[in-house]
Length: 239
Image (tube, rainbow, N blue to C red; front, side, top):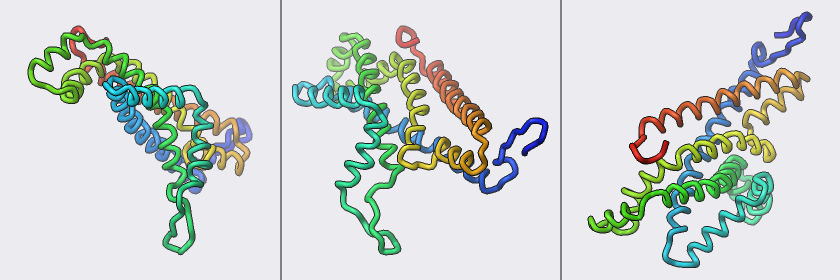
């Protein structure tokens, strides 16, 4: 789609190979984002629970994890998981008899980004839990709930409503941070766009395309999270 008047060269409109690469990269970004969103939220919930543990070493381990992953660059973390930790694990034979790493680059990207975002989610959930009145916990215990049951069925649902706006911001940042997977050759949007502009020398067009696609992805996530906030709103809790 190139014209002498404009010079715009959007190869993915007329080149089936480039189009397939863009579509594959788009869905790879979505899949990586969903995996990281899910596991980082689980890490946040579990980490917030461990922070309230009666055992001092459990709290120290949780706090050490938070400080480590919040205060180091996510790209360095990804390199550590992929190059350092990945090389320490045993290699397995594929169907052709060749040795290959136990985990592929997508897995390491998902692990790294999940731990990175999970460290922030722990603090987000902790702040929500602290916003739940102590009398609510005492009422749950009076009804026969143990500590774990009170956390899962009483405290966490209320805390989730309080911390959802902050969680929304962190999850949006996580979607944008998935571009770092480019550094370990995960074929997401930035990676395949780089391949296309290297072949076709259409860097401005691909940069604009990337901007539009990421604005659409983030906008869809924000819209969905805001709808969710309104749906689960409880008077007296949250926004």
